[in-house]
Image (cartoon, rainbow, N blue to C red; front, side):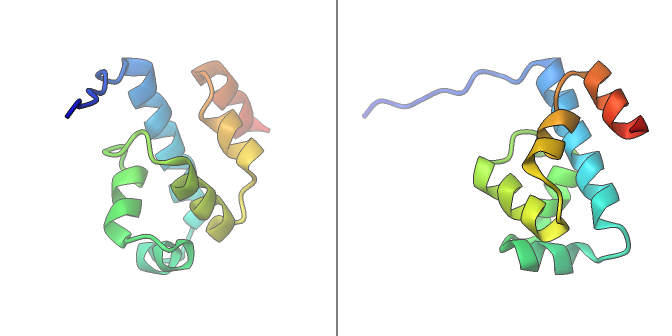
Length: 93
């Protein structure tokens, strides 16, 4: 059986995950982590890991479910997770 080995994440990939987590946390606002996770069909622990950057590369469908639960467009998420200079532009827009 052949195993796939994942390459370690680069520093930019970690930062991108942190930006994603920060955006999701802000979008969640006053709603509880449990509430948003339930609407997205995820565990609160999964959402916690994403928001804190401990899961910097969540699966596409996980991100899509969170975007739907938080009423964020995928375009907005993609822009926020792009390079840091683009992220700063999204925050100030």
